Image 1 (cartoon, rainbow, N blue to C red):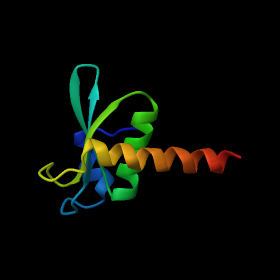
Image 2 (spheres, rainbow, N blue to C red):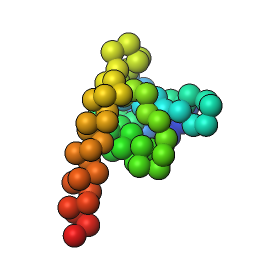
Image 3 (spheres, rainbow, N blue to C red):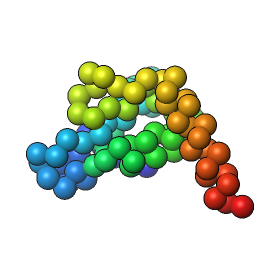
Image 4 (cartoon, rainbow, N blue to C red):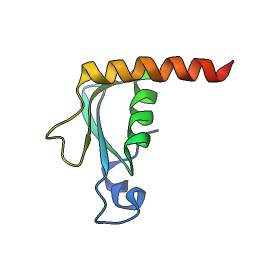
Length: 88
């Protein structure tokens, strides 16, 4: 599932690599998870949504220009449909 912010350097492989961030709500607390590329971040965000978490944004580097909730909802619908097809 999600990795803590402190795991970002090890997951990214290099300290100079720009990680992809996923901002989500865990109870009443916002959490930030980092991944080494956009595919992992999007998959993680979809897994979080699938488990009932509220994902607020996906972004490369600082969350200055995140992929918003409406787009994330659209991506999740595609992800869930593909995952369902793959299980058949």
